[in-house]
Image (tube, rainbow, N blue to C red; front, side):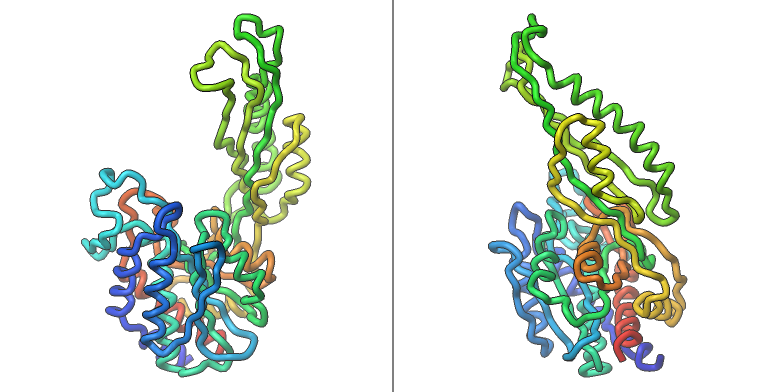
Length: 385
């Protein structure tokens, strides 16, 4: 307990804040600059502080960065991602998206909340643990991963390379207002193609219009969604959703008098623990009457509250006089795969309001970021020492 408090106190506020400013000022959206600039900065930053980080290529030009404190097995992974989404039209921003402007205790910028605030807190905690313990009895691994905002190739490459092997838990610093999130929704990204036959719009009987078939399917999804929501309520994640996100049908630019040969519907499906993705795909296919192409499959996951990692998270919060609030993650995170593929207990807990990611004028409260670093440092000592 005493060492955990010492680690929390060893977090240097100015260090964390200045690191966050530097990270936000480095654009890392993709397509665009990508993660290379952030990784190069963090690599040098950690080397200057006595650590030996190493890179792993998740995809060409998209590196992961890993740094260890201590050796052996049974350790803890501190995970965050280095990519951000595009700022969009910069003229819509009150503050420059990569200016890291501080006003009223808030730091504004793309990625401030999602999730460079959490990443800076993880690094601050790692360095604080180093100051107090030197080398912990079990290893502490920082994993700053690429492509979380896309297809999550960073965490997949990390796991495929065996870089989670031998660890017994993972802390993911996504912006969840410091709730202890033990549940994460699953996600399916689907594409359905409804075939038709081209014909003149004046003689529709000579062809086969795929648009009404696709439209009937989209409308019928609402009834299926209602049934699923009634069957699978969840107190922390909310209901499952079947959301159409794309509807395309065209015979070509300007061809308004031609029945198209194909209609495409894309779905963003969000599931909760207890739902079987295979069964759900079968129901969607039966409803559509066409095949269902799975572009991405991310299972819903949960971590038992009695797990030692959860207990350490709750104890760290109490140690610093903070409330313990349980929560769920409305979307998937890298923690989804750390749990589903590596079978690691995962706690998602980080600074930042849940609804702010990807918005214009994204911000994070600097006091909360520093507090998160103190909680992480205490948690790590409680879990490892």
